[in-house]
Length: 235
Image (cartoon, rainbow, N blue to C red; front, side, top):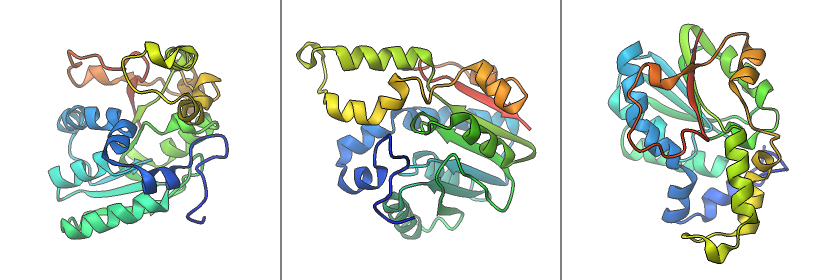
């Protein structure tokens, strides 16, 4: 895979995005990951500190670095399709001397590491993968027996939300909005080609997902939890 490849031809070129993105663009691409840090910390406290973690679709490593810093005894691998952000992450890990954080390239729906992980996290990524159910199976296959898969995915409510945004007059919105960029990034979601539901996850994996709020307190600020459910599946 070369530095100009896209994750998928029907969605955003993340290699280019991370190369060109300023601080604001980087923040806007990872809001759910930032919000998830403390919640994932609560989950680990409830389920036990894993020896190994895979953060698939890690982007700039919001969760990868947080887990590696909190748990120096844990080996944390961040996987992403974009080599540009992986190179940045490797540099940061060296500079911060985080020897337990490593970064490798992987492009969903294909994910076939040569080992199983105690915890596999995939947050804010499946919405860019039209073969979401195939990706789910690959992610779940990478969970070691007794481990867990933690997911954040977009559902039909998210699709309706993004369609409303796309149809709105940008002048009527209370934030800057680029319809072309929005269509490029969320086209699969708006067409419901990459959305998921509890039933679809069950049918793909043969087990029902469990709400994240079973093991950690639901934040008072709902943010987008109705649109981007957080679930976990034991192995």
